[in-house]
Image 1: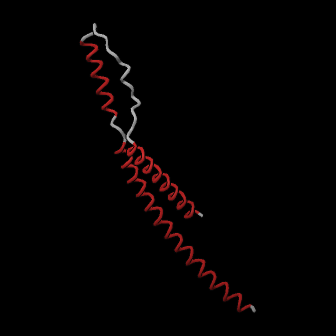
Image 2 (image 1 turned 180 degrees about the horizontal axis):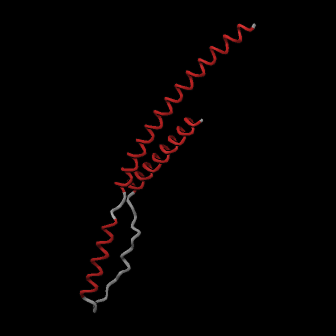
Image 3 (image 1 turned 180 degrees about the vertical axis):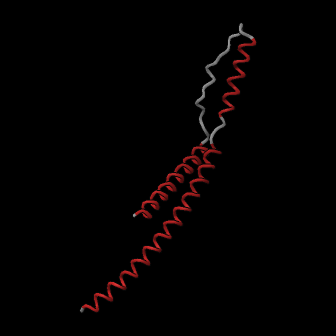
Length: 116
């Protein structure tokens, strides 16, 4: 009877150690992949942002025109900074941000799994 439990403990410890080693290696791979995906996603997201220089240039041009000819009346009501974005741009940014959130969640889960 005692021999059975000794053998069982030895086999189960080997199995548990092997399982934990494989799980730790898998978490490391997931962590690396999620980190790389987050970095690539962040670069795509920053590349998709609108250029703030365009709005600045339009506003500076209007200021120069007003300064050059102060007696004229300029309609500045059409200088709205809240332009609508094309639907494709909104969909692509939504997809990119969603992907970034999931890759960060995967990385967080991998970190928690490695620390556990």
